[in-house]
Amino acid sequence: MRVHNFSAGPATMPLEVLERARDEMTDWRGSGMSVMEMSHRSKEFVGIAAEAEARLRSLLQVPEDYAVLFLQGGATGQFAGIPLNLTAPGAAAAYVNTGAWSAKAIGEAKKYVDVRVIADEKDSNYASVPAEGTLEVPGDAAYLHYTLNETIGGVEFPYVPDAGEVPLVTDASSTILSRPLDVTRFGVIYAGAQKNLGPSGITVVIVRRDLLNRAREDVPGALDWSAMAQADSMLNTPPTLAWYLVGLVLEWVEQQGGLTEMGRRNQAKADLLYGAIDGSDFYSNPVEPAARSWMNVPFLVPDPALEKPFVAAAAEAGLSGLGGHRSVGGMRASIYNAMPIEGVQALVDFMTDFEKQNG
Image (tube, rainbow, N blue to C red; front, side, top):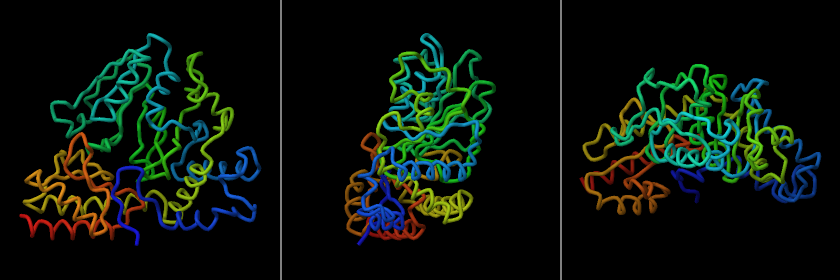
């Protein structure tokens, strides 16, 4: 029996996608072989790759003046790739720090660029984001970087920052495809796949084409956006199985009604779970309501000694992956696109019973 998997990533995937991949695993559409076995230069795989890109462009309404890249190295690889592709040595870049993943991006960027942290939510214990309209972006910054959603802390920007003429760069790993997003507001959007896009091992980078000519001469080829764009993301052998699975997930999203429908479902799931937390004297959420994530919901119990019993009992009840990140503790439910509202209702019901037994 499949469990309800609330893991932050690698995360649950649509059952329909997994079943289709199973059926095509040994013989993809009469080819006599698995996608894992076919050449990435073959007509078959080139078609798979092109179809995935076309679906992503359609869902996100990506204009033609943006390149769509399918790369390796995760979002973490792009922490270095961004300054290497957008700045010359000695240049400055602006960053916003709203939590663990922002901090990691900042730490990596400092190796290559003069990082200016223009806002840091340390005083809120990383439970909020800067108020809209308060960010002051230096005019000489090569770009402004922010993390759209902090997976660990459950903090999300409810607005797109105004960077003026400075290119806006965002890590959208845990929110991409969860609702409509205006791509034209950004210079670069990047996202690891293992939350809403597909399995781990592949990363999407959407970059405005006029930014492709800024890379340093010594940028590694695997991180060189311009070179990858010219090679259709196949400068080296790509993660073919992951790319294929991303395509299946994108097709599934289309069949569900697209990003407007995904947004409706995700808001309903978040409202259900936050409603249960806020309506209880036993559970609490540490994030300011205006900055709460739709995708990653951390919550606490009155006594930390109850955390391990909660997670263990939940697992026995078929609710997996609810332990909070090791750096913050507590519990966390990640409710990405593939998590049905029935799974969230099952979690709410379990939380109610656990409170009765331990409250």
